[in-house]
Each structure stands twice: as structure tokens, then as C-alpha cells.
Picture (cartoon, helix red, strand yellow):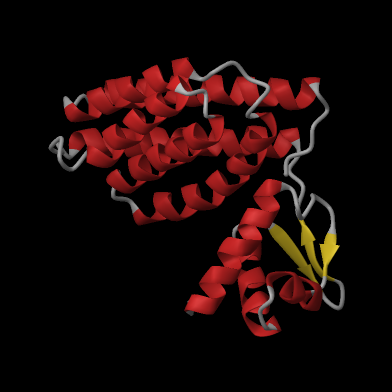
Length: 218
């Protein structure tokens, strides 16, 4: 992927996650290129990447449609992520990794704690994303990494809608720390069980908020 295409992907993802490109809306390549102030070629290639990530649907002569995500979609996505990430946690524990190798997990937790201390939910969400990405990477399974990355994009869209509706996620930080400690101890079953419970609880909260407030995922 060229630098121009990579930059276009990042810019379009940000517009989707911020809601500037709303769910169900249609956008022509030329319109998006003008908005990003770049040529149409990298935009065209970036849209192909985003289609593969499940964020847009490309339609001949109609451009890209920003895909909405229903509560049913989110429930299914969470179910898949729960199993994949829990397996990654167990695999990481089996690998008997040193604390230095697990630094990305503990660093993300530290940043999550600092973000909550100043009630900065956006920074907390970024650190939370980093924790989950690092967890999957430490499981060292390329197929889990590929699938989880695509699914995580959809979760991120829904979570940004509900980020300021939920209580401060102190319990989430505690859950992450417990999982990281279990991985460091080489306790695969505990790591798997704790992460599975964490993801199930997160799913229940997210779906409840989406249904209660009749929200669309952006």
C-alpha cells in the first residue's frame, strides 16, 4: 500500500468513526477526493481497503455507501471477538512471555488509568484499543489478528456513540489488569476465562445502550 493510499485510508476511517460520513450515506470518489484534497486514485484504492474492513459498500456508478451496524451485527461481532481474543490471551499465557514482552499491555493499562483519573474518555478509548490490539498480537496467530482487526473496527464505531453514556469504565481497567497479570503468570485458563467474562460484560452494556437509546453505530 502506497503512502498516499495509507493516508487516505486513515483519513476516511477518521471521518467514518467521527460520524462526519454518516451510516447509510453515499459518497462519490470525486466528492471524497475533494474533501480530502487529494487525487481520486488513492481514494479509489482506499475505498477498496475500507470495503474489505467492512466499513463501506462499493456500488457501481453510485460510489461508496457507509455501512450502518445494527445491534444484531454488534452482538455477532462481539461473540466472535470474545472467542478470538480469549484464545489469544490463552496462547500468550502459554508462551510464558516476559514482562518486557508484555510491556504493550501494561503500558496501555497505565494510560487507561491516567485517562480515567482526568476523566478523558477519548484517551481512555484509544488506550483500550491499544490493549486489545496488543493482546491479539501477543497471541501470535496471524489469522486471529486479521479477523480481529476487521471486527474491532466495527466495535470502535459503536463504542464511540456510547462512550459518554456509560459510567466511567474503572471496572474495565481492573479486568484488563487481571488478564495481563494472568498472562504474565503463565495461567492460560485464567487469562482466557477473565477475558471472556470481560468481553461478555462489555457486549451486554453496549447492546443495552444501543437498544435503549435507539442509536445507530457510526
